Length: 339
Image (cartoon, rainbow, N blue to C red; front, side, top):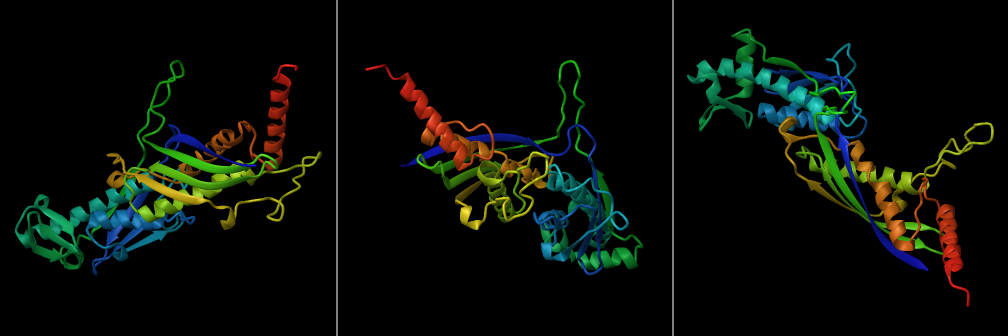
């Protein structure tokens, strides 16, 4: 018989390293045509981080994302970055890029101020222009100001900055401290069908609510959540490294190391919880690894809701579930009073 169950999994997750320094540095150069070049040592691994970092620079400079060229390379070319790990790129590298862009923008303001006959603090950058606050009609194109800065004033608009999340080392006696600068939170709810005659599990639907601060790029956030759920389903139900008696892995390839495919994916509903973090770039935190953390717990709880058995070792294969169901039935039968 097919039985349906629902389960919930909640998590909180830190951004960056535990206490240890994990800085990022960046350089932003505003070119004479009004475009910008961002130099960063971070790595794009398919998560869309370079798009987000370009958006952060564009927002700070008042230009379009299409105007920003992000150069991601090794440290022969770019400033140092600790790495695309610990779900830190948007928060740490994003802060460095925003700070570097702000420094380059200050040079534009310093150059544009006498041209517009105002003080630098009276200026703002928006819509590819340097304009007077409250009087947007008094403006100059960023390209014109950048060109003037470079070839008339001799002040190339370049900014460099670094950011290291502020932490406090843990007290060895009390355990108190601030090991991370910020945290993200999430809840996922899984709906599953379990066949109590075979132990087979079908994940029908997952609803995922994730806090990542300000979502710089909501579509990329949603894609990250969907990808994390796919990994979580594999962790919960399919992926397992098997070894023989000599310690040799017997499933070292994708022929017999089972991973979820598109056919295994359930209906997914993503709710991005906007929660502005004043320490992040435009309020952003991160969304990478946390997306896969609550999935397995939610699925295990849903299995329990459906057939009343707890699986404590992952993956929860059909064999494990069916064995637990049979043991539960045997225990219930044994507990019945003798007739």
